[in-house]
Image (cartoon, rainbow, N blue to C red; front, side):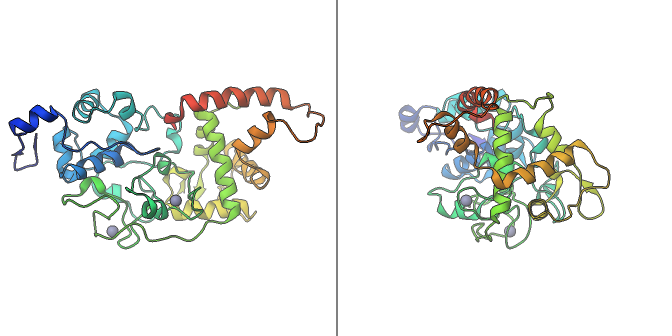
Length: 336
Ligand SMILES: [Zn+2]
Ligand SMILES: [Zn+2]
């Protein structure tokens, strides 16, 4: 292998090569729900190569190379990874967020490394739950942390974070030039596991409702008029600061604030013009307090009830949609 501007090369000794073939010394299995870039950083670290130099080894261009690969993984790099890790191609490809049915709601990736770190008024490319990172046996970053509609952790109930708690910059693990694990800020060296405050129950219910709706969309369920739910949610503009911005352009602080305003019935930072997207956000906020979660609703609908009662007349078509969607959900979970 050859990497870095100095052209350092590593050649396996004859005996090692005969024992291990072309396999890299350490093979790391992806964790459930892990994002490709997270796995690549862990793979690089385990093999003793800082992520900045691992990019050259893979032939991946750009300072934020690993985040770019999350969105588009060339066949050449996919095959190289399979060849050196012996992890099946389809398992590696499943770590990406491409093709992405939720692209409209995905946090933006900017071209330059300075922009990737993002000023505090703008969204960063990735969020994280500090409690998850602290508890993981091997800390890793999840695919669903790249969605703008996620503001808290479903497991811990705490708010997510989109910046280093010390230097306030967005994450830049792809730039790390030292052999340091990715749960340490690459820009200032602070651990990212400092706890955040809990999210309110109302915010968590709205977030859960939207997450369930997006899961149904990801497996093919469509609104009655055929409109795309991510496009509808992503097209609403909110007024934070000087310019109206869609939810995917807002930093975590503003998105969490928005969810609170919506769920507490306070005046929301919508523009003055009414449009279907804004009406849909408001309807979701109104429905959220009574929402019990997709799995609970589904099991209530299909499992025997303790007391037999009349079926509601609307149960038929909705039940059929849910059964179909749940079956496809299991098959296409990786697309989320
Ligand atoms: Zn968590
Ligand atoms: Zn930092």
